[in-house]
Image (cartoon, rainbow, N blue to C red; front, side):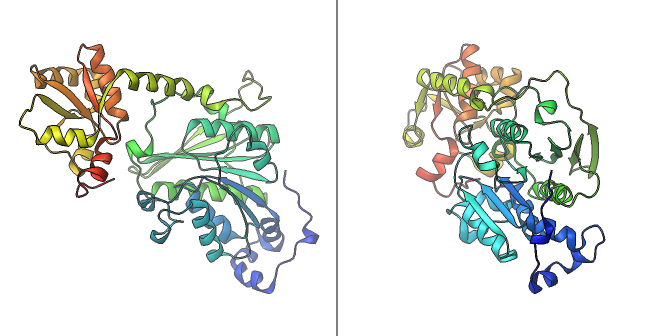
Length: 390
C-alpha cells in the first residue's frame, strides 16, 4: 500500500534531534522516520477527533497533512477540541489547526480544504493522500468517505464518539471490511442524537482520536496489528475496552460510484418533511414570546421539552419542563393535557428542533401548539443575554 522511495528522503540535523526517541526504537528507526516523513494523511474534520490526531500526527513527523473542514471555531468547541484556542474563536478551524500544527512541527506540509466534502470533490481531494482519517460526526459524510476510500483503495481510519462512549477501527485495509460491513444502512434521520443534543465528555475524543493517530502511524510504519477486522469499543464511565470482530460481507453491494449521500441517509426527505411541518406549524419569535410573558393575559402554557440537566443550566421564566422522551413514550402527553386545562400550548427547546418534534407528536394526540423559533438559544441572544448559552 505504502512503499515510498526512502533513498530520496533525508532528515535534517534538526529532525534527527526532534525525532530522537523514535529513532532509537527498533520498530521505527531511521527507516520508519523516513516513512513518516514521506507519508501523506488526509484528516476529514478538525473537531473533537481531528484535534488530538492532528497534533500527534504532526508531532510524529508525518510529512504532509491535509485538512478538510468548513466550520469556524466556537467557544463551545474548546471543551474538547484541543487544537483550537480562545484567540481563534470566530475564525476558520482549518487555519487554527494549521497554526497549531506549525507550532508543534514546522516541517509538516499542511494542505487546507475549506469546503464541505461532497460526491463532486471527494475523489479529487482524497486521491493524492496515502490514507484518510475520518473525524466526522454525521452519517452521510462517513458513507461518503468510506465509498471514496474503497474506490481509490485507501485505508480509512475511523472513529466516533457520543456522551461517554467511543469506537474505533480501520476500514478498507488489506482486504478488510469497510464501513458498510459495520453499518449496511444508515439509521433514520434524528434517531441518533448529535453531540450538540446529547453531549460528550471532553476527554473522550482525545482518547479515540489518539487511537486513530496510533493506527495511522502503525499503517505508515507497517508495524503491529491494526484494528482492521476489529471494532474497539470504549466506555469512559466504566473505563473498559471491549472488541467486536468485523468481517467483510460477501453479499454487500459493490461500490461503483459516489452517490447522493444526503438522499441515501434520508436527509433530503427529512428536510422536506421538516419544511412541510414548519409550514403547517404555528411559530412565534422569542420577542413575541417575551411580549406574551409580559402581558397580563396569560392564556397559554409554555413547556420546555429539553432534558432536565439542560433546564438546570438555563430556563425561560414561567416555563414548565416536560422532556421530549416523556412525550415520545406517552407519559408526557397526559402531563401536557393536564397542564393546558383549556389554555393554548407554546413549546420550546434549545434551538427549535426538538420542540417541533414534540408538537408533531402532540398534534397526533389532538393537541395543537405553537413552536418558539430558535428556542432558548435565540432567547439568550435576542431577549435576555444573562441566560447562559451552552
